[in-house]
Length: 134
Image (tube, rainbow, N blue to C red):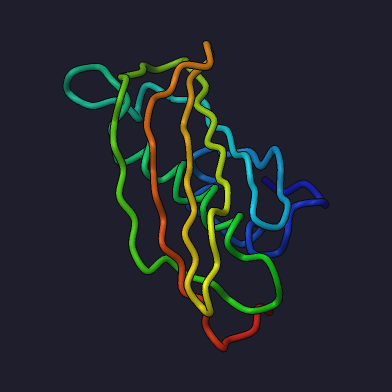
């Protein structure tokens, strides 16, 4: 995630970088982020730990909702897991803005696997602060 086209916000995101996330698309209100599931990201059932699926979706959400110079943070989020995945698969999270009302926003993120099957659906609620990005 150190590509020159990647915003400073993501260049400083050590958690996403440590997980090997790649920003594929970064547009106002839309983002696509992918991640190869490593064996150390699986749980006791040998399936991808839900926390990593959530983190991937949350990263795409963060990129999509930070559309201007103001810092936007998560006010809340929830996820529905629909299909299990395993080590060696690549997951892709596609985040799309649904609505902005004042300082609040609503974003949907779909996580898919290598076959394009839906793995999870995530809904994030954002809050835009008065703080400006560095």
